[in-house]
Image (cartoon, rainbow, N blue to C red; front, top):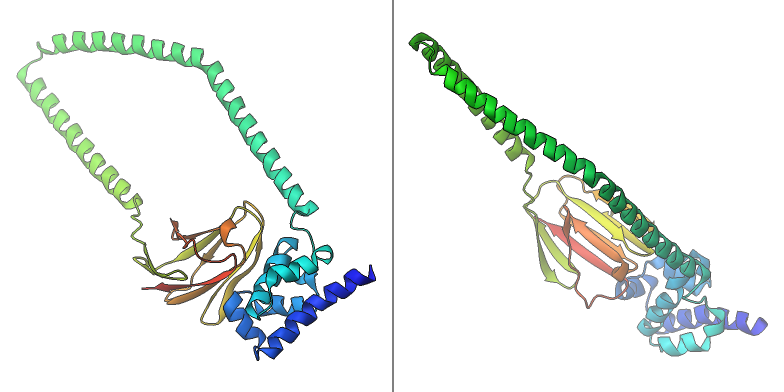
Length: 287
C-alpha cells in the first residue's frame, strides 16, 4: 500500500519537476493541452478528486506528461495500480442506466402503437359515418339548388350581394391568415464558417444562443471578454443553453470531452473538426 502511495505522489512530483525543468508555467501547459490550470495544479498536488471524474484522470495526466517531455503512456503504465480505472462503477452504472432508459422508451413506443391499433376500428367507423353524412348533405344541397332557380331577380341580386360579401370576408380572412403564417416562419439565417480546426465565424443573427448537448459526462466553459457565462459539468442527456449578450464579438469555449459534446449555435449544429483532441479550446467570432 505504501508503494502505491509513493507512486501516486511521484506522478505529481515528476510532472512538476519536468515542467519546471522546461521553464514552463501552468499557464503555458494550459495553452498547449487546453486543460484548465486549476486541474493541472490538482494533478501536481495529487488531488485527483478535484478533476471532473475518474475518466479524466488518466487522459489529463497523459496530455500533461507528453507536453513536458515525459512519455505519457509509460508514466501511466508505471502507476497503473494507483490510478482510477476508466471503467469505474460509476461509469458502468451510467451505461446500465442508459440501457434501461432505451429499453423503457422502446417499450413505451410499442405500447403507444398497440393503443393506436385498438382505436383503428373506431376510427374506421367514424370515417364511414362522415362519408354517409357528406353524401346526404350533397343530396340536400343539390335539391336546394334546384329550388333556388325559381327565386325572383331581386332575391337573386340580394343573394349575389351576400355571396360577394362572404367571398370578400373569406379573402380578408385568408390574407390575415397568410400574414400570420408568414410571420411565424422565422427564417434561420445563421451561417457558420470554419476558419481553422478551432476557430469559427458566425453571421446572420443579432441575437445569438449557444446550446451544449452532452451524450455522456462532460465539462465545458463559455466566456467572453474575460467574463464567464457558464462553467460546469453535464451528465448524459443534459442540455445547457447560454444566451450571449448583445454585441458579443468573440466567445471562448473550453471543452473537456469533445466526442460527447454537441454544440448548437442558434439551433444550427457546429460540425467540429475531427482532428481536435478530447480537450480543446474553441474561438467563435460573431459578425
